[in-house]
Amino acid sequence: MFTGIVESLGEITKIESEGNNLHFTLQCPFANELKIDQSLAHDGVCLTVVKCDSSSYTVTAIQETLERSSLGVWAVGKKVNLERCLRLGDRLDGHMVQGHVDTTGTLVSKESRDGSYLLKFEHPYSQDNPQGITISKGSITINGISLTVVDSAVGSFSVALIPYTWSETNMHLLAEGDKVNLEFDIFGKYISKMMAVRL
Image (cartoon, rainbow, N blue to C red; front, side, top):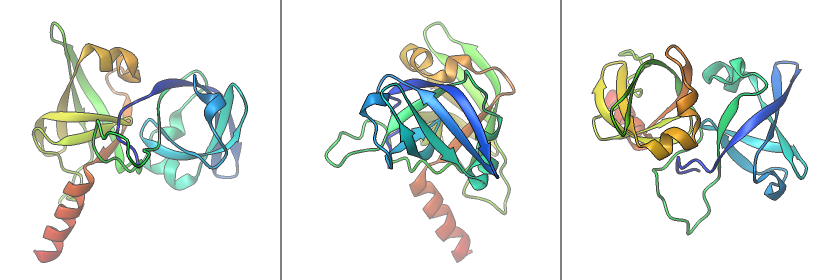
């Protein structure tokens, strides 16, 4: 479980394939604190540390993860948002994030607004999959970042970022057309599922 509050940016230094799996090696400021079997969110995707040393660590993504997220197009040198898992007793500064990406979205526009940044995303939504919904002022996780929805429509939404979030995460590196990992609000997904069953 995570909160969507990014701790640091990591940089991919090596990618190795093994069957349908990809092994990602990253460097980050807290690599020397990590342990094997520890869970970390990488752009919102929960991955397990399988190897580590004082300056880097390795995680593995299986085919299901690669198909559902943007990890399949990652390249060496990419900057990734990192968050270690929530500890009992910690403050919940963001919202409840599982690290289980629902789908990818596409950045369709970004706009500087004299002190903030407005970004609009589109995502696949259908009546057959009503769990991918957003509501104005509700929570959404984009690349592992807990954000508040500004405007919500069918298959799209926008978010506003303060300068700190813009500069301290990889959001400022996004270009229009780039894919991002989306995790919709877990409570909203449960409610949507229950309502769909009733109807």
